[in-house]
Image (cartoon, rainbow over all chains, first blue to last red; front, top):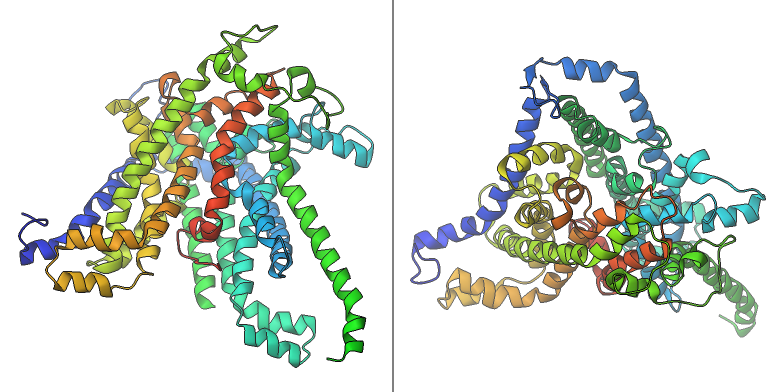
Amino acid sequence: MSVYGKPSSLSYRLFPVLLVVPAVSLVIFLVIFPLIWALGLSFYSYNALRGEPPLFTGVTNYVRLLNSVEVWKRFVTTSQFVALSVAIEFLIGFGLAHLFYARFRGRRLAVTLVTTPLLIAPVAVGIFHRYLFDATFGVYTYFANLLVGEQVRFLTSYPMLAIVWMDVWQWSPFMMLFILAGLEAIPKHLMESSQIDRLSALNKFRYVVWPTIKPLVALALLFRTMDAFRTFDTIFTLTGGGPGTATEVLSIHIYRVAFQFYRTGEATALAFIFLVIIILLTNVYLRLARRE
Amino acid sequence: MTSNNRGRRRPKRLLKSLAIYSATTVAVVFFMFPIFWLIATAFKTRAQAFSTPPLFVWEPTFRNFIDIFLKRQTEIEAITGQEIELATGAELFFYNSFIVTLSSILIATFIGTLAAYSFSRYRPLGTNTMMFFILSTRMLPAIVVAIPIYFFYRAVGLYNTYPGLIMLYVMFNLPFAVWMMKSFFDEIPRDIEQAALVDGSTPWRVFYKVAIPQVYVGLGATIGFLTINIWNEFLFALLLTERSTRTIPVMIAGTRGEVGINWGLIAAIETLYVLPALVLIFILQRYLLRGMTFGTVRGAK
């Protein structure tokens, strides 16, 4: 069969399919296949370290996890982290977007510099924030000392503050990009006529700005919430979930259960609960975004 | 507008731009400071990095950058075992990261562009379903797939190999390549391609002679984002590699928990590690929003 040589009607019809085959088959091979395997395993009691054959236990893993106080605590920790980070990032992003909506000299360079954290490797961010927050040599600790007059041990006394701060530092520019795009999509004539009609700042925001940026704000919140929910690299390298379990978010908890305690069956079950939450979140947000 | 009026407005406008510039300065300082401090620390000796209060003025040293690669030859004072491992392994880890990133980018871009072109131009049956399915893999938490993949790789012998890691990276970045490239293909007019088809070109020739040259810029942007994604990936590299295939992020993360670690040396390694990102941010700025949303949000210019 030659797509390249003599054109035949068959090769013309097959061409688009041939282009898609490698991509789709790879995705199926490396996503669907492992997911089905994992779903199966989540109904077994299996410890990879012991090497005993998996024992079928039905929904025991799920029942135990959903009734576990510890798992509930991990959910609370994760939700705290997500809610705090996303809320602060939204506020900072909103402010920055309005700042950069104004035209001024050096604006482009400023936007580039502010968005730099977005591309920095999470691992580098996490490890380096360890140094910034270090109780003796950390420069943030030093600044805090200048402010409040005592040596604040961020990583031991306020670990949640530290991970939220780090996330806010890296991801606020992301919110800013979305909202800025929304602001710049507002038709010029609307802004002008609102000026002529002398709309108050509040009404201008309510009737001119908000309707345009609303879908983008919803999308930004969607992306950020789900990404914050899955955060692993930065927290893993900054606090490792500690001290104790103070910052042990869900993804780190699953990692620990799976690769430190090797309770594989339980870990896969938890991973699936996690997956369902993510899917639900996606749907809720998509519906919100579509309604606009 | 009368001149009187304008005269009264000038101080107000001056005040406004003063406010804008001071707010911008605060923002830039907030977001650039950790990066500045990282690079600054890379030029500090061990003693300078451990000074309290932190040094804001110091005599810079290039020693760390030399030590990363040539520590064996240099005279060294008290060092911990961890540092020897770091110093003697760095070039291997950089090499591994480089190989894995480059191969994954090439394959993902190639396969992704093919699919994107088909989805954009021919819309084969089930395009919407497939596009949505491909996108949904992005929402997948890596840890969920990591567990089965880990045991699967161990069983099949892909654990601790380049092809294993490369295959995973290709898979995880395909959605990005497909969506991003589709958004670029959607933007170019079809007329030229249709004319070429009518003139008797084969679809394959039309694809690489007519369509591809029109999306060179988009192809570049896609490759830029893929570079960042793959270069920065950590979890799979952590789980699926041992020393011989370990990439830089795993090595950097390995320094966590070391007491008395030489921060100057770590900072130097990290500086080299984040260098591509620092360069690419300037090149990719125009496409940043599009890149971060899989081409679904185009954003302003």
